[in-house]
Every structure is written in C-alpha cells, then in structure tokens.
Amino acid sequence: MPPSIHSLGKKPQASQLPHLSKCLFLPNLNHLGIIKEHTIIRLITEGLPAWQDSQLFIKDLHFDGVPMRIYLPREPSASKRRGVVFIHGGCGIFGSIRSYERICQYIARKSDSVVLSIGYNLAPEHRYPTQTLECLSATVHFLKTADTYGVDPARIIVCGDSVGGTFATSVCQELGHRTDIPKIRAQVLIYPFLQALNFNLPSHQKNAAVAFLSRDRTVHFILKYLNKDSSLKEPILAGSHVPESINLKYRKWINPDLIPDEFKLGYKPPLPTLFLPQVHEEVKELFEPRVSPLLAEDAVVCGLPDTCIVTCEHDVLRDDGLLYKKRLEDNNVHVTWHHVEKGFHPAVGFFGYGIFSFPSSSTIMNHAVNFIKGY
Image (cartoon, rainbow, N blue to C red; front, side):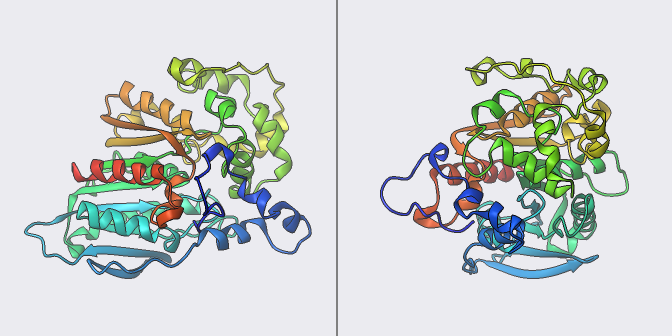
C-alpha cells in the first residue's frame, strides 16, 4: 500500500479517510473503458519497493507455475527453524509478493522464522478457485520440502490477511485430515473474510461506509473475484441470494445473536427480504467453504490447528472473525484472539511506511509475530 495522501498534521481516523476508489474516480475510468478498475488498484497497492533486509537471505522461487519468495535469516541456527507460509490479501484480485515485502521481512526477522510468501495468480484473469488451489499446492510443497530450507516440518504456521486469511484457513481445512504430509502447527488470520451469506451483521451496519473496504465494496470485490456481473450486488447485500433452507441450516453458525453484546450497540435487525432463485443460481460459489470457510462442517473445523484471530473495530469483516472464533472454540480448537480498537481494514497494508504507517498497523503485526514466536 503506498503512502497515504494525509501526510501532514494529525492522522485522520479510519472512518474519516476517503474511499480509495472514489478518490481516484476508478469506476468512471472503468466505465469509460480507459483502464480496468482492478488494474489501477494493483498499481496503487504495489507501493514503493522495500529495502532488502541485510539480516535475511531472500530468494525467488517457482513451483508448478506459482511464484514464491522465501526469506531465510542469515544468522546460523543451532536447530531447525519454524516456517511461516504467508498468503497476502487483496480480495483475490490485487496484492502481490512485492506489496507484502515489508511484512514478510518483519515476520522473518522478528520471529527468527523462514517465511514463504505465495504469489498466487490473481482473478479475474485466473478464475476461481485457482487462488485457493495454488496456495494449497504451494503449502503442501513447502511441508514436503521443509528440510531443504532448514525448517522443522512440525513447526509450520500458515498466515494471511483479509482474503489471504480466507485462503489460509481454507488450506488448513483441506489439509486437516491428511496423513501423508506433516500437520500444520497453527494458523494466523488477520481480519479474514469468512462468509458470504449475511452482509447485515452488526459490523456491516456499523462500518458500512468505512474507508478502504465499505460494505458495498466488499460485495463488489467478491463479484469481481468470482467473475460475476456487478448487477448482483444489491440483491446479495439484501440477502436475496440465500434460500430459507440454507438460512436455517447455518443459523447456528452465522447469526447476530452469536455476537457479544458489546459489539452490537445500535444494531438494527434487517427487514425480511424476498428470496430470488435466479440470483442464488448465479452465485452458488458463495456457499462453498473455499469462499465461506465458516460453512465448513464440524468434522472439518475440529481438525484445525491452534489459531490466532485478529479483528479490528473499524472493519466490516469484524464479525466474521468473531463468529469463527466461537466456532473454533465450540470445536475445542485453541484460539488466541486480539481485537484492535483503533484498527481498520487494511491496516497492515500501511505497515513499514514510517510516518505514513498507522499505530494499528504495528499493533496487528506484533500480535501476529508474538503468536508465531510461541511455536
């Protein structure tokens, strides 16, 4: 994420920052056919090149057509190090190894870990579920070849932010019951996207117009990621894509009643909405665990590793994290939870930019690193 335009004076609160897309007139450029919206956002989020950390040996790799970058501490170690698989965010349509360079270097240096950053191919050019499958393939490859990089295969952690958190926990869900590879030791999920059934939870209402990732833009980017028509956005926001049978089935897991009261101040239950079968048929992918990991069955969730979840108060996705926390705990998975009161989505994208960074960016990264160091 490049430096913010707010470089002088007091830093604005997350809720006061303008929407990135509106500031740059991206929808207009897109409608005029001048340049695709996601192409502009990719250029912006690439940010400035990071200085290469002299304490790390950094090497670019490829496996099965997927670019990766590995960060190895130069200091000799008396024993094998832990490994961290990092999966970047960006709605599956932007973000890159380069844009997360500062974050991966910091994790490797501060936790004395070998970090593998996965540069999965982006949508919409590469259709869903390419991104999840590439993250899965790269993680399995790292688990099998950990010794090559001086990594203890029993101490590998998967970490991701935003949709990177979606991919990270999807990888853990799909590998949980495999016996032919080492078990993933833990997962770190930083403000993850975890469900596409209900966009009217308390955090969606509270942060509907918050900067960078509004409620509206969340669904817009999901549709872009799945290569669906943007006209589906309004019925999905209203919940018209979900039949009553599915609502009833998943009410035990996705329900505002499961959100702690302190996070429901001012919440107003939405009015009933009309189910639209044609919309449901168009977006059936939203009900797959690879898009909505909260919908995975208990038999899968109970096999997940120790988990760190970081939620932010100024984030439409806050309640996804709260609901997943409860699901994991109900299935006897050990959960470490950190809630960042002044945090927003995507705070870690500003990490490492000096005066342009936010206090919450460092807070989130330190929570992640401290958790990783415990393994």
